Length: 329
Image (cartoon, rainbow, N blue to C red; front, side, top):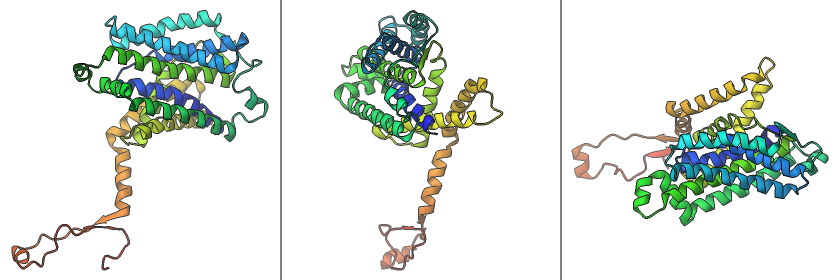
């Protein structure tokens, strides 16, 4: 279970990137499948070359910034549809990633990484590593919420809410799109760099279908924790990533489950997560929970004679009381 928590937190950073583009910027960005591998490949090659783990990880994230910027320029300057712009960048990144690694797989088993001290101490995959990753991710959540609360962040959110209105208010929406896509893919690439070091290798196919996991995390998290506050939504996205990884681990523990069906399972999880809000499942559960806590006492509409005599109870007096309490006080 702790290993699933570790992976959920690592991929939680990727889920925050997906949330930034799909929910905040309202941009269907498919660059993620390629930028995740780009971050992993860049960090792996630098680590094999003797770079310090922290520096190699940072460079891997910066490469993701460039990938997101390319998608943004294709959309804003090239006037290419957002979906197609992301696909074009993703396809180009596949060849670039092969160029970076020089082969399809780069092992890191005998290379110093960020997780080497934990692995040597036998703490990787324990609650110690979970606490460390949770603290690291908390910093990113705080930084993201703070940024989205600044003037630039509010302009970014306005661009996603109503691009035409934002442009009418003098906001450079093209710049906001490029900025949002860069930050998103930077977080995704950083997540890829961490994941490569965690599993001990970087593979050319490690990012295929990753957008499904990202969307599942965002949808599951926001469906379970439905709150309009920005910081709660960011935490919900991370929680959705953890829930998604726990579901995957539970499926893998089933003896008859075929690992080749993993992509099918991921697709089914996203389908269910999309349908549950439409069926209003979570709202019904929350409504029933509130009904158990409070009981509404209806009172009859007074007759006109009672209103004239002043004997009727005014509506201002409470009609709601907690369940199980006597209202005779």
